[in-house]
Length: 277
Image: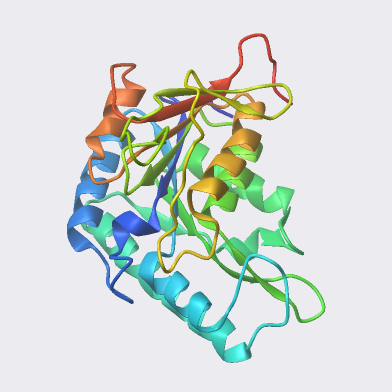
Protein backbone atom coordinates (compact mmCIF):
# COMPACT_ATOMS: atom_id res chain seq x y z
CA UNK A 1 0.00 0.00 0.00
CA UNK A 2 2.87 2.41 0.64
CA UNK A 3 3.64 2.71 -3.07
CA UNK A 4 1.10 5.48 -3.63
CA UNK A 5 1.18 8.02 -6.45
CA UNK A 6 3.67 10.27 -4.70
CA UNK A 7 6.06 9.73 -1.79
CA UNK A 8 4.00 7.14 0.08
CA UNK A 9 1.55 7.01 2.96
CA UNK A 10 1.95 8.55 6.41
CA UNK A 11 -0.45 7.82 9.28
CA UNK A 12 -0.26 10.57 11.89
CA UNK A 13 -1.89 10.66 15.32
CA UNK A 14 -2.80 14.08 16.68
CA UNK A 15 -2.59 13.47 20.40
CA UNK A 16 -5.43 14.65 22.59
CA UNK A 17 -2.92 16.39 24.85
CA UNK A 18 -1.89 18.54 21.88
CA UNK A 19 -5.19 19.44 20.24
CA UNK A 20 -6.93 20.15 23.58
CA UNK A 21 -5.98 21.47 26.99
CA UNK A 22 -6.32 18.25 28.97
CA UNK A 23 -6.55 20.10 32.28
CA UNK A 24 -9.45 22.22 30.98
CA UNK A 25 -12.56 20.19 30.17
CA UNK A 26 -13.94 20.57 26.63
CA UNK A 27 -11.31 23.13 25.60
CA UNK A 28 -9.59 22.86 22.19
CA UNK A 29 -6.06 24.15 21.63
CA UNK A 30 -6.67 26.18 18.49
CA UNK A 31 -3.06 27.35 18.25
CA UNK A 32 -1.71 23.79 18.23
CA UNK A 33 -4.32 22.67 15.69
CA UNK A 34 -3.30 25.60 13.48
CA UNK A 35 0.40 24.65 13.61
CA UNK A 36 -0.28 20.99 12.95
CA UNK A 37 -2.51 21.76 9.97
CA UNK A 38 0.24 23.93 8.48
CA UNK A 39 2.78 21.11 8.67
CA UNK A 40 0.28 18.60 7.28
CA UNK A 41 -0.32 20.92 4.33
CA UNK A 42 3.43 20.93 3.66
CA UNK A 43 3.64 17.13 3.93
CA UNK A 44 0.65 16.65 1.64
CA UNK A 45 2.69 18.00 -1.28
CA UNK A 46 4.72 14.77 -1.24
CA UNK A 47 2.74 12.18 0.70
CA UNK A 48 -0.67 10.65 1.12
CA UNK A 49 -1.83 11.19 4.70
CA UNK A 50 -4.33 9.66 7.09
CA UNK A 51 -5.05 11.44 10.36
CA UNK A 52 -6.15 9.89 13.64
CA UNK A 53 -6.90 12.17 16.57
CA UNK A 54 -7.36 11.60 20.26
CA UNK A 55 -10.04 12.80 22.64
CA UNK A 56 -8.11 14.95 25.08
CA UNK A 57 -10.36 16.98 27.34
CA UNK A 58 -13.42 16.16 25.21
CA UNK A 59 -13.99 12.40 25.10
CA UNK A 60 -11.78 11.65 28.09
CA UNK A 61 -13.63 14.13 30.26
CA UNK A 62 -16.95 12.37 29.82
CA UNK A 63 -15.51 8.85 29.87
CA UNK A 64 -13.99 9.57 33.28
CA UNK A 65 -17.22 11.13 34.52
CA UNK A 66 -19.20 8.02 33.58
CA UNK A 67 -16.42 5.53 34.45
CA UNK A 68 -16.11 4.22 30.90
CA UNK A 69 -13.06 2.27 29.74
CA UNK A 70 -11.57 0.31 26.86
CA UNK A 71 -13.06 -2.88 28.32
CA UNK A 72 -16.48 -3.66 26.79
CA UNK A 73 -19.29 -3.30 29.28
CA UNK A 74 -22.83 -1.98 29.67
CA UNK A 75 -22.05 1.66 30.38
CA UNK A 76 -24.65 4.35 31.15
CA UNK A 77 -26.52 5.34 28.01
CA UNK A 78 -26.06 9.01 28.84
CA UNK A 79 -22.30 8.49 29.07
CA UNK A 80 -22.21 6.72 25.70
CA UNK A 81 -24.11 9.63 24.17
CA UNK A 82 -21.95 12.29 25.84
CA UNK A 83 -18.64 10.73 24.75
CA UNK A 84 -19.86 10.30 21.20
CA UNK A 85 -21.21 13.85 20.95
CA UNK A 86 -18.05 15.41 22.39
CA UNK A 87 -15.81 13.53 20.00
CA UNK A 88 -17.97 14.58 17.06
CA UNK A 89 -17.64 18.18 18.22
CA UNK A 90 -13.84 17.97 18.52
CA UNK A 91 -13.60 16.32 15.11
CA UNK A 92 -15.68 19.12 13.62
CA UNK A 93 -13.24 21.72 14.99
CA UNK A 94 -10.30 19.93 13.37
CA UNK A 95 -12.13 19.37 10.09
CA UNK A 96 -13.09 23.06 9.89
CA UNK A 97 -9.44 24.07 10.32
CA UNK A 98 -8.35 21.56 7.67
CA UNK A 99 -10.97 22.89 5.25
CA UNK A 100 -9.69 26.43 5.80
CA UNK A 101 -6.24 25.13 4.80
CA UNK A 102 -7.66 23.46 1.67
CA UNK A 103 -6.62 20.05 3.00
CA UNK A 104 -9.90 18.42 1.90
CA UNK A 105 -10.56 16.32 5.02
CA UNK A 106 -13.05 13.47 5.04
CA UNK A 107 -14.18 12.05 8.38
CA UNK A 108 -14.50 8.27 8.71
CA UNK A 109 -16.18 7.32 11.96
CA UNK A 110 -14.47 4.47 13.77
CA UNK A 111 -17.77 2.62 14.22
CA UNK A 112 -18.03 2.34 10.41
CA UNK A 113 -15.05 -0.01 10.14
CA UNK A 114 -14.39 -1.34 13.66
CA UNK A 115 -16.95 -3.56 15.39
CA UNK A 116 -17.35 -6.38 17.91
CA UNK A 117 -14.44 -5.25 20.09
CA UNK A 118 -11.78 -4.30 17.52
CA UNK A 119 -12.70 -6.59 14.65
CA UNK A 120 -12.03 -4.68 11.45
CA UNK A 121 -14.11 -4.48 8.28
CA UNK A 122 -11.69 -5.32 5.49
CA UNK A 123 -14.09 -3.94 2.88
CA UNK A 124 -14.26 -0.58 4.64
CA UNK A 125 -10.48 -0.46 4.95
CA UNK A 126 -10.26 -1.05 1.20
CA UNK A 127 -12.62 1.90 0.75
CA UNK A 128 -10.06 4.05 2.59
CA UNK A 129 -7.36 2.71 0.29
CA UNK A 130 -9.41 3.67 -2.74
CA UNK A 131 -10.00 7.17 -1.34
CA UNK A 132 -6.35 7.98 -0.81
CA UNK A 133 -5.26 6.41 -4.09
CA UNK A 134 -7.79 8.18 -6.30
CA UNK A 135 -8.72 11.39 -4.49
CA UNK A 136 -6.92 14.39 -3.07
CA UNK A 137 -8.49 14.05 0.36
CA UNK A 138 -7.18 13.37 3.87
CA UNK A 139 -9.21 10.71 5.69
CA UNK A 140 -9.64 11.55 9.38
CA UNK A 141 -10.81 9.22 12.11
CA UNK A 142 -10.69 9.41 15.88
CA UNK A 143 -10.98 7.54 19.13
CA UNK A 144 -14.61 7.13 20.14
CA UNK A 145 -17.13 4.99 21.97
CA UNK A 146 -18.18 2.01 19.84
CA UNK A 147 -20.79 -0.71 20.22
CA UNK A 148 -19.41 -4.22 20.65
CA UNK A 149 -21.99 -6.96 21.35
CA UNK A 150 -25.10 -7.58 23.45
CA UNK A 151 -25.58 -3.96 24.42
CA UNK A 152 -21.95 -3.52 25.44
CA UNK A 153 -19.94 -0.47 24.47
CA UNK A 154 -16.22 0.21 24.64
CA UNK A 155 -13.87 3.16 24.38
CA UNK A 156 -11.84 2.64 21.22
CA UNK A 157 -8.65 4.63 21.61
CA UNK A 158 -6.94 6.58 18.87
CA UNK A 159 -3.82 4.53 19.61
CA UNK A 160 -5.71 1.31 18.83
CA UNK A 161 -6.89 2.89 15.58
CA UNK A 162 -3.28 3.69 14.72
CA UNK A 163 -2.49 -0.01 15.03
CA UNK A 164 -5.53 -1.13 13.02
CA UNK A 165 -4.89 1.30 10.17
CA UNK A 166 -1.13 0.80 10.10
CA UNK A 167 -1.32 -2.99 9.98
CA UNK A 168 -3.97 -2.95 7.26
CA UNK A 169 -2.61 -0.10 5.10
CA UNK A 170 1.16 -0.55 5.55
CA UNK A 171 2.28 3.12 5.64
CA UNK A 172 5.86 4.25 5.27
CA UNK A 173 5.76 5.62 8.82
CA UNK A 174 3.38 5.70 11.76
CA UNK A 175 3.81 8.91 13.80
CA UNK A 176 2.38 9.67 17.23
CA UNK A 177 2.39 13.27 18.45
CA UNK A 178 2.28 13.71 22.22
CA UNK A 179 2.88 16.52 24.71
CA UNK A 180 6.42 15.35 25.53
CA UNK A 181 9.59 15.07 23.44
CA UNK A 182 9.60 11.27 23.36
CA UNK A 183 10.19 8.33 25.71
CA UNK A 184 12.33 9.20 28.71
CA UNK A 185 14.65 6.75 30.42
CA UNK A 186 13.50 8.20 33.74
CA UNK A 187 11.50 11.19 34.83
CA UNK A 188 14.36 12.51 36.90
CA UNK A 189 17.03 12.53 34.21
CA UNK A 190 14.99 14.07 31.42
CA UNK A 191 16.99 12.02 28.89
CA UNK A 192 15.12 10.95 25.78
CA UNK A 193 15.58 7.44 24.47
CA UNK A 194 16.18 8.26 20.81
CA UNK A 195 16.04 4.71 19.48
CA UNK A 196 14.16 1.63 20.62
CA UNK A 197 14.02 -1.80 19.03
CA UNK A 198 11.32 -4.46 19.12
CA UNK A 199 12.71 -7.97 19.61
CA UNK A 200 11.26 -11.24 18.31
CA UNK A 201 9.80 -11.72 21.82
CA UNK A 202 7.92 -8.42 21.54
CA UNK A 203 10.23 -6.75 24.04
CA UNK A 204 11.33 -3.14 23.76
CA UNK A 205 15.11 -2.87 23.78
CA UNK A 206 17.01 0.31 24.60
CA UNK A 207 20.62 1.28 25.04
CA UNK A 208 20.02 2.32 28.65
CA UNK A 209 20.03 0.32 31.88
CA UNK A 210 17.21 2.26 33.51
CA UNK A 211 13.53 1.44 33.63
CA UNK A 212 11.24 3.43 31.39
CA UNK A 213 8.87 5.58 33.41
CA UNK A 214 5.40 6.77 32.45
CA UNK A 215 2.90 9.32 33.66
CA UNK A 216 -0.80 9.63 32.92
CA UNK A 217 -2.76 12.83 32.75
CA UNK A 218 -5.98 13.19 34.78
CA UNK A 219 -8.45 12.66 31.92
CA UNK A 220 -6.65 9.77 30.16
CA UNK A 221 -8.55 6.49 30.45
CA UNK A 222 -7.05 4.89 27.34
CA UNK A 223 -3.66 3.94 28.78
CA UNK A 224 -1.41 6.93 28.11
CA UNK A 225 2.16 6.26 27.01
CA UNK A 226 1.99 2.59 27.98
CA UNK A 227 -0.81 2.06 25.48
CA UNK A 228 1.12 3.90 22.77
CA UNK A 229 4.11 1.62 23.27
CA UNK A 230 1.94 -1.50 23.36
CA UNK A 231 0.26 -0.59 20.07
CA UNK A 232 3.62 0.49 18.61
CA UNK A 233 5.03 -2.99 19.15
CA UNK A 234 2.27 -4.48 16.96
CA UNK A 235 2.86 -1.85 14.29
CA UNK A 236 6.63 -2.34 14.26
CA UNK A 237 6.31 -6.13 14.13
CA UNK A 238 4.59 -5.58 10.79
CA UNK A 239 7.70 -3.81 9.49
CA UNK A 240 6.46 -0.23 9.95
CA UNK A 241 8.70 2.23 11.85
CA UNK A 242 7.00 4.22 14.61
CA UNK A 243 7.97 7.68 15.82
CA UNK A 244 6.88 9.51 18.96
CA UNK A 245 7.46 13.26 18.96
CA UNK A 246 6.30 16.43 20.64
CA UNK A 247 3.28 17.70 18.74
CA UNK A 248 3.87 21.26 19.91
CA UNK A 249 6.83 21.18 17.49
CA UNK A 250 5.18 19.53 14.45
CA UNK A 251 8.04 20.60 12.18
CA UNK A 252 9.85 17.59 13.64
CA UNK A 253 7.65 15.41 11.45
CA UNK A 254 9.27 17.07 8.43
CA UNK A 255 12.70 16.32 9.92
CA UNK A 256 11.74 12.66 10.22
CA UNK A 257 10.40 12.20 6.69
CA UNK A 258 13.42 14.04 5.30
CA UNK A 259 15.71 11.57 7.05
CA UNK A 260 17.40 14.27 9.13
CA UNK A 261 18.14 14.60 12.82
CA UNK A 262 15.08 15.03 15.00
CA UNK A 263 14.10 15.22 18.64
CA UNK A 264 11.96 12.26 19.59
CA UNK A 265 11.91 8.47 19.87
CA UNK A 266 11.99 6.03 16.97
CA UNK A 267 10.83 2.43 17.41
CA UNK A 268 11.93 -0.08 14.81
CA UNK A 269 12.26 -3.82 14.33
CA UNK A 270 15.44 -5.40 15.64
CA UNK A 271 17.81 -6.08 12.78
CA UNK A 272 17.28 -9.52 11.33
CA UNK A 273 13.57 -9.67 12.18
CA UNK A 274 11.17 -9.73 9.25
CA UNK A 275 7.89 -8.79 10.93
CA UNK A 276 4.57 -10.49 10.44
CA UNK A 277 3.73 -9.50 6.87
